[in-house]
Amino acid sequence: MYINIPDILKKGEGLSVEFKRAKNKLPENLFDTVCAFLNRNGGTILLGVADNGKIEGVDANAVQQMKKDISSLSNNPQKLFPAFLFDAQEVKFEGKWLIHFFVPASSQVHTCNGKVYDRGADGDFILKASEQIKSLYVRKSNLYSENTIYPYLYESDFVPGIIEKVRKKIKVNRPDHPWNDLSDIEFFKIAGLYRKDIATNTEGFTMAALLLFGKDEVIMGAIPHYKVDALLRIKDLDRYDDRENIKCNLIDAYDRLMAFVAKHLPDKFYLQGDIRISLREKIFREIVANMLVHREYTNAYPSSFVIYRDKAETKNANKPHTYGQLLPDNFEPFPKNPHIIQIFTQIGRSEELGTGVRNVYKYTKAYSGKDNIEFEEKDVFITQVPLGDIFADKKIIGVKDGVKDGVKDGAKEVLYLIKQTPHITTKELANQLNMPFRTVQRYLEKLKKEKKIYRVDGRKHGYWKINT
Image (cartoon, rainbow, N blue to C red; front, side):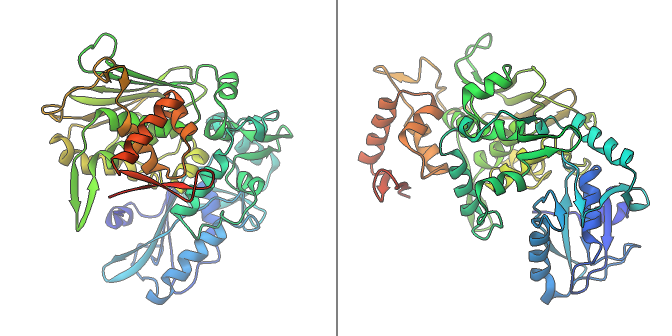
């Protein structure tokens, strides 16, 4: 990930930037600042820099241990409560090692060593008066709807197996993840998905947990306006050529939207160094993830993902932090749903906050030959990615075109989801693709006959393997 050190140094210390000396161990007051940033508007921390911006560096032999300590302490509720996991990055600048990490604004009030810190222009300060602390709770509650507690929401209201699925993804993405050894209830609490509101004395699962894991009917019961419309509008601009009406939890919604992308947008492969990558994957995983994790879910404005001949466009309800066009080098990332974002980041479906926008700008020119990208932050957040002439040599598959002899050509969609989730079951494939169970079975048999996939370790505990 690219980190613009000169730009951070130029800004200097202030409301959203903190420099700290750290030769061979973490500064004692590091987590005072982490707590303050979480409670205010977020910020960037650079270790190995003096207060005046002079580069002093971190001992090369201490870098990895200090990164591990940051991860360990951020996940330790005795130090930081509620815990909030960070991944620090080392970067070499002017011949010296620095450690960088971004602290997002949190939807919860955090304490460090039992004290509530806030951030001002002159640095970190402790909130001592109960009225100050209560005011901070009220501000967070008004700003972050994902924190809404549903005291009568239970684990039985979650899609069966989805917690295990998410935790497996975390383990695959990071085998040494500190959440891997937690019980489910510890996982919910440390991820901010189960909480107690000390202002109202209510306790339970949050809206974030419901949106991430909930059964369709439970989500619709609590948030009846929730849905995502995925549309293909190339031939029929008044209505659509193909449509997915998505009303499932965010984990499955991501898979269904990415399957829709794989179905209708051609891929281009690109060499990044010696590694061959999928440009479509790089661009649209960010577009889809951002659309889902930054939406304001109390607003009834419907979310949409529309593929036109010349562009792909998303629209979703928003609580704007600023107004106008977001450009990769001139915006401060601000999370709308920090705990939803954290889950998506830990399972590898989104990058560190702000990196997604930069990736879209970075790869779109290579994908479509165009770079007139729009990230427009206002009450409705609008993203537009130019597609250029990528459809010139591609047959457009719509609702009617995609049917041959009464059978929908969905083998590619099935293959894509298997690639994303090797442990996925036939039933889960049918649900996510909105296809009959037997149709999915037929596609699986077809893919097996073509030797594109095979099953490992049996039906119940096995998984799919893709032949490359």
